[in-house]
Image (cartoon, rainbow, N blue to C red):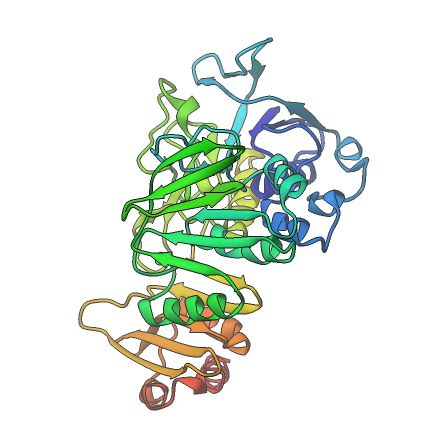
Length: 414
């Protein structure tokens, strides 16, 4: 059996390792879109900060790991998938054949449509090469204008500030990380970042970028011009799907998969950022671009590829974000639902906030800032769809009792 995996991020690597255990005699090829050993994008902020060396970003630290497991690494980018001939084209050289295919190509940075976005000095911070280029240039006093304050934009701040740069963040909307937290939580995050020396400009974005005298000039929509040595575009990511045109694989927002993570084409599977799977709470199909989800999908897809039936129980939307030392999180339907109830507690001075969302006597979503002890309990109650009974009313009165509610619920189930 020839197994081909496109993508060498966490989903692809775990899938390859799972396949080797489940199918010892199989041929396993891992197509890597970048040169060098497979690495974790989530380690890049630690590289920027200087906490780890480049080797610390590698998903597996042993040099002979893939050789030992007889996993063949091929460097190249897929340009087309022929599901009839069962081959993947790389643009040059012979196509790669497969009997079973896993598409785990992850995401790519979204592109801003701004004049000057292709100038030298304009960068993203998504790949290891991006990070190394920033490290080569960022030093005390380097002026960085960053467009975007989403998840990626926030986690790289600490690495940038640790190098002494002059950092300005542009936020198109009214608040930071708007896809994972409400306005109150975002306001706390903004205050925290500004107290650490970050300049944050909301309700603005560039209308153009120009090069002048060896530096960049970033023109904002209100007419202001910001000088910059680096313009860092961090406006979000999109799934890597362009190479699937004409393949016959059904694509909506992502690759539509069933409970076995198989696509509309038999023998072709998807995992990670590109897989549009069912949400375990809402039952709706959606993309869920978080690493724990990618790892689990990679494992389950691999089992099915090896002929060992396994079902994906559905993705669970949650994010835990550390921004300049402040931990925030979101779980499930943190925006709430029609007819649902909510409660919250806020301590602006200590940068602590907890918001809970209910549907009947079930906790369905939460936002937190500074409440690090509650992460496991929140996930357990929300993902487990636990009925709280009388504890629902106690939580409405005092949201900080979440751990007690979790322990009581676990005891009642036991």
